[in-house]
Image (cartoon, rainbow over all chains, first blue to last red):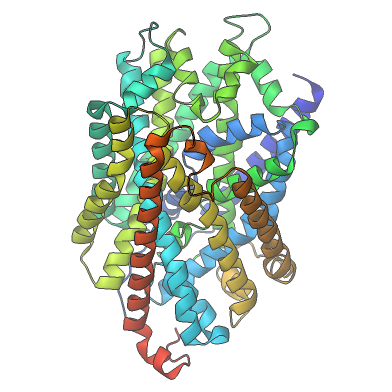
Length: 32
Length: 526
């Protein structure tokens, strides 16, 4: 894969993964 | 009027149901095709911008409107818009706005599901055919096989009826035992099947030509091609955000109406968005395009929306383990479609329950009958005309499945930004672990989001004019006169459903808020 493609893919995948994990763990940890 | 409302049974069940509501066929089918067409990595720029400028603010607003609506015992949009706008508009004008919004959402939930249920039926049919080798005869092209499929009532009707029946049974069981239970099974299965398919796809190597491989497919999808990024691509990205997050349909509000009043909105909405993006960008982007590229090169990607039902079966029937992988692929599509269609089904059941006091079982049965009636033309057109252009379906999708979502989104954000009595952030942040910042209201909800949606709406209108959708005989059927009556039928059906939707919403609003409308002042507050 070209560097540019890898850059775009990793930025998107990384952001989505971080947001998914933090939001899901937060919402489940704080559920009443 | 005090009504006992159901609630979600568990947080994880609710989150999965909301994620299922958003994750639909478009995540796996429409997103990869749009991204590959409009600039690959470059498409992600308008896509992420639309997510931030439209998706997140509108999602928060829809959740807030839903939870407030639930407090008043309402799960439908006509009531929610009335409640939120009646202070500034006054009840007599608010009832008109509420009725217009109720009309649009009834139009969308009735008519989108009239063809969406068929799409889900096709995915179930193709899952069955994948498992049984039904399209493995290589003397028939997969395009011809698809045309034969939609023209064959023995394929179309059973899988469609099974789909609508399961939807009806699930909705009849209620929020916790029906919708939530199905989401708890289908959504994890969807993600697990997706991971299996990604693993198989990315380890497939270069089975046909050394310069065609799945990794090169990923490279094609993600390499920014700035020349392919146009205003049309930007519109497609914004449209995809509406479509993928199920915004402007009324079903997010409906699910949110079953929240308890102290339940979290901001964190839960962000979780739903991120799970949807996970399914779309990571799973959706890593299966269809790479596998098609590995077997057919860049030309295989040009089939657009035919990618799922034409290109991929062409691959599944020749590759090792293709039957199993084909079954997994179409089951993913089935789960994704089902968990969205169930939300539209439930919306209509809620209307009958709350607007007419009907029992859930009876309401669910009536919606079943209604869906069969409105879905019949979609099934009959290819069978009777011996074509596979799906003109009735396309006409409905152009208006109620695409254009009106943006119109509805614009009305919602204007109501939240300009017509609510109080700052919507008060309700949005109430009970939320993460808090939306002040600028989410003062900058985004009031100005940026409505302005961006207006630009999108103007751009879409111009594009529709250029593509001939406003013409008496739209360009896409100009060369196939046999389809003209089907397009006209679609327009008449839209009009009839709108009239029924407007009158029904108006009468329901008047039945509960009649005194407010007579006095033209707000009397009922909760």
